[in-house]
Image (cartoon, rainbow, N blue to C red):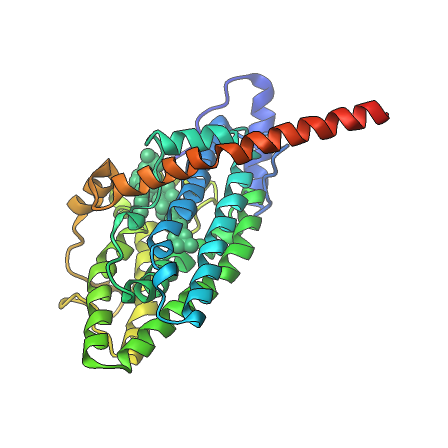
Amino acid sequence: MTTPAPTAIEDLDEQANFDALIAAEQRIEPRDWMPAAYRKTLIRQISQHAHSEIIGMQPEGNWITRAPSLKRKAILMAKVQDEAGHGLYLYSAAQTLGITRDEMTEQLIEGKARYSSIFNYPTPTWADMGAIGWLVDGAAICNQVPLCRASYGPYGRAMVRICKEESFHQRQGFEILLTLMQGTEAQRDMAQDAVNRWYWPSLMMFGPPDDESPNSAQSMQWKIKRFSNDELRQRFIGMLVPQAEILGITLPDPELRWDGDHWHTSEIDWTEFHEVLSGRGPMNAVRLQNRRAAHEEGAWVREAAVVYAAKQAAKQEAAA
Ligand code: 3HC
């Protein structure tokens, strides 16, 4: 696969320079020349990543008022606040590519933007907080650590801090499940039920199988993606198996086994994946409706900020 040909003579040199930077493991920065297709796929991936962080606040936000203790409430609040921050870092990284925050927000609110499929599932019990931390943030770590080395500077740098916070997210989820698994039979059943519901959707987070991934090959050639969807999915499973043993949790795949060079699994239900991507998941409509409502309810804050900024600018002009 080769980068789409440059359209003008001067771009030939620029293209050669870009290719040399990528080959030398150098970072591409916002002011550098880059192929239009490179910019386009970065805007696509980074904005989706940002949307995922913001929508991802909802499943856990649903339990902040119902956490079983003050300690758990404090931890969950910290995690949800972290996700908001991750979204802001990533929106800022996307903005360096020429798209505005308003454009991205509008795309999300109008249902025209993708966000991670995983956030379209319900969280009916407290154990879901454990399963999300352990599985969803665990998958996020597998996917995001390589992104710290993404060729686009602002994206890779945003990932460094996000990954540090993601590790805390994953550990607190593991600890919730461990506490439940050391509790009553009902608590153990609740934890196992949550893992049964979140396990397969967490495998889908890594994207379709490599042979059905239209973006992977080019993203890997541009060193945005460092590993393929299936490679990271395998790495995630390899991380889960020993941790599930410590938890005493059964991963809900009777065919799961190490066959010498990779993890053999049951078939992943890609029909479910595409249904969720098409907006027909259990919670898609609720997630978007909540995001729209939050945007509308927050309009006064944006208006106040604009008026304040204008007044400040007028004051400075008058003082100049
Ligand atoms: N959910 C929604 N859409 C998905 C998806 C998923 N889990 N996996 C793939 N897709 C979409 C892709 O966006 C692409 O559609 P598009 O061309 O319209 O954008 C299509 O399915 C084909 O997938 P590809 O594998 O070809 O696409 P990519 O090369 O972009 O790979 C990806 C998909 C692995 C999700 C990649 O975009 C990526 O690594 N993104 C950054 C990480 C990210 O977004 N993680 C989401 C979760 S954030 C999170 O977990 C936060 C934590 O704090 C909880």
